[in-house]
Length: 339
Ligand SMILES: NC(=O)c1ccc[n+]([C@@H]2O[C@H](COP(=O)([O-])OP(=O)(O)OC[C@H]3O[C@@H](n4cnc5c(N)ncnc54)[C@H](OP(=O)(O)O)[C@@H]3O)[C@@H](O)[C@H]2O)c1
Image 1 (cartoon, rainbow, N blue to C red):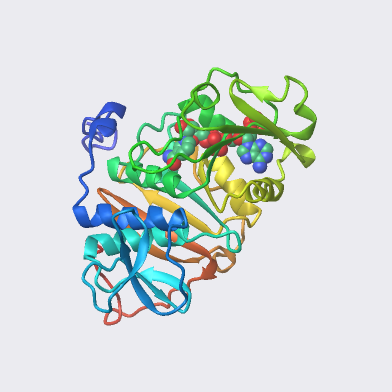
Image 2: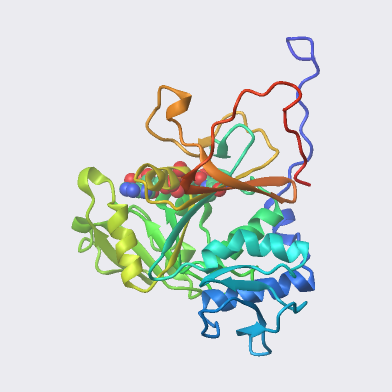
């Protein structure tokens, strides 16, 4: 018994990294086709046209116009904007709705999206830095899908030092992104996998005055210096550099400090927070911004909610504000299940 007389908190056997790695997430045929349509859009394999049309996939994996009312339609084109076709199944529709904004990023409208998987009490790792895994296999698949649809994936130096991630899209059947590591002081050794494997190219981003210190390469990675006033990397310069290299969708995958720097600088278009039903009690924080005094001053973005296995993903559109909730009397209160 605890000092308060209640039974101590008991914890079920935790999922180990292997449990999550081994847990294949089953994907139906219509979801697979919807995914192929997103990859085709990302790759620009889209038949020209500006009229209102429904679109489906041909045998070569290109998006082509379909006869009106076709049951094979996955996407729709209305006035030059790509959306989800009415005929898409419910499972395909959820996938298309979530990923269309990323797949549709263009040179004219590039996109920067950040993601964090956090506990119910707002932590992304334990104090020791263990984060394998906060969220479940469906959210891990989501990360791989985000990588596959993005031209670049960005992480901070601490994530590389703690997790030694590969940052590939290996579970999502899509291309690997350019891997970008923010290491302003060049504190990371060259043995980490992003710097030493051959799976995808890597950029190590450091302060301009650190480029020449150890040469223009770090293992297999290219070293690029950017301005870093007061030691803080100029993230707008980083995005400009990536856009100049033809990258349209940029995915900021963590950790909390890196995502917070992007958010504080006003450089994110979307923020995805996956909340997992786990309580860490203490740990490495997710978002940390300059303190606000009043709730009315806080960010309250428009958002959509997706269920991912046992986790709930808030997909926030930082370009649009949500309405502050009105006080509800009992009769007007809204309660619904997303699954
Ligand atoms: N649950 C999740 O979604 C998730 C995702 C990723 C990582 N993680 C976990 O989170 C932890 C790491 O996160 P973290 O917040 O501690 O660190 P982090 O964001 O991975 O890395 C922070 C470091 O990156 C560098 N950095 C990032 N942005 C910078 C900027 N604008 N200017 C200058 N330097 C910049 C700095 O390096 P210097 O320190 O050299 O100055 C900074 O201290 C690990 O435990 C990892 O396992 C969890």
